[in-house]
Amino acid sequence: MRYVLTTAPGRMEVHEGPAPHPAADEALVRVEMVGLCGSDYHLYDGTHPYAHYPQIQGHELVGVVVQDATGTIPVGQRVAVEPVRPCDSCFACRRGRYNCCSDLKVMGAHVPGGLAELIAVPVRWLHPVAGDLAPEVAVLAEPMSVAVQTVDRAGVAAGDRVAVLGAGPIGVFAALAAADRGARVLVADQVGSRLAHAERLGAHRLVDTGVEDLAAAVTEFTAGDGASTVIEATGVPAVLRLAVDLVAHSGTVVVVGISDQEVTIPVIEFSRKELNLIGSRNNTGLFSHAAALVARHADLVARIVSQVFPLAEAPAAITYAAAHPEKVEKVAIRVAE
Image (cartoon, rainbow, N blue to C red; front, side):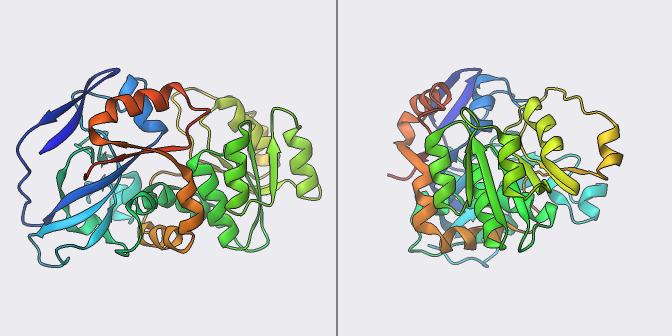
């Protein structure tokens, strides 16, 4: 089989090798499509905290089962892959929070990922999707699950006023997930095409932060209360600091953006607002819900995928996407020809 190996920062190569042999609890999956996200770019260039080499990247993936050692999933079934490998024994896992396992392994970062024609995956992490759902849509289940987790962590409910900072795929999917719960959603970004996606996916108010004052917009949108939930989806410290100012008293800031930088927040803000500041990582038991949400809004979410490259061009695809973030919403790699 063919696979793509990241051998060093900025170096990705197409290789050939033997197909994997599934263990007793695994299925063999023929990979159809892999989505690339911002973390893939940073894993590729060596700036991600989890980067190490050599590695087969790719944690957003969909494929077809060709063999199931457990006999629970029919051969030919299309599946979306939940890319986590928790330890099942640490404190977080014992509480059912496997998404933030203290020794969590994630496909494409800690263990080999989906940029390969065949992969062996524990059956527990395979989620059947409708056969008529195009692979380039089904592959969005994983980023949608990350977005759904942020909304679930905040307890977003009908009537809430939610501000999403950052309109990349996770941000716009969080807007969709919040709107799906009946919340009113404001989305802020500096890239017009991303804001257009947010509007199509249910955002009620758009803020181009290059031309409009975000604080004033949130004040107007919430009738002076501040946002009941602010979802920080950029990983930029200054944006997280601003989120603390934008959230309502007793409100919640959810951090889903990734960065190893530090942020300074006055301690008084935590008690003055009785602020909830929480992180969000992967998802806990929400993957199937996210896949169903993608299927219900297939025509809308499909437009997030802006470019599709064949497997042989994966090195060029990730180089292009990393160098042109203003032109790329979501790049996908078509693995199966």
